[in-house]
Image (tube, rainbow, N blue to C red; front, side, top):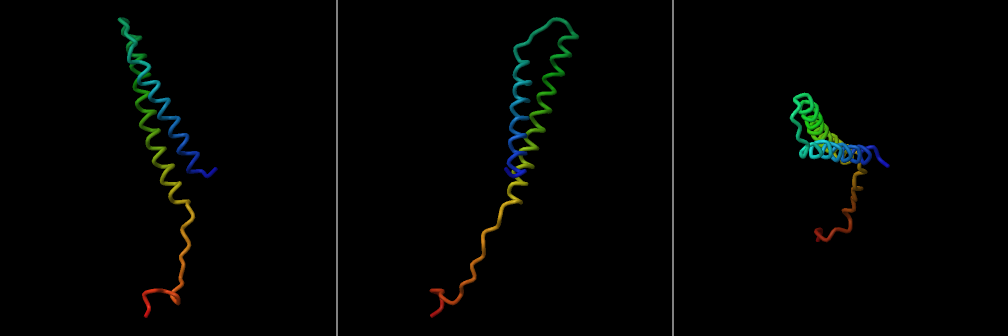
Length: 84
């Protein structure tokens, strides 16, 4: 596997992990201020991880595009239909 593909997959895993952390804390309600801070920190970590995952995925996609083999250039001017 090329490095760009692996980086895209790693970014996707980061996005999924961030979504799990962010939306997993939506239903948690607590009256204790310390627990609210703790769950808020987990939710912020999910946001940060998800945004980093988006950046990593874009970087992997650009790396994939840069490492592709270019199409061969065919220079056959002798049998062209444009010449009459």
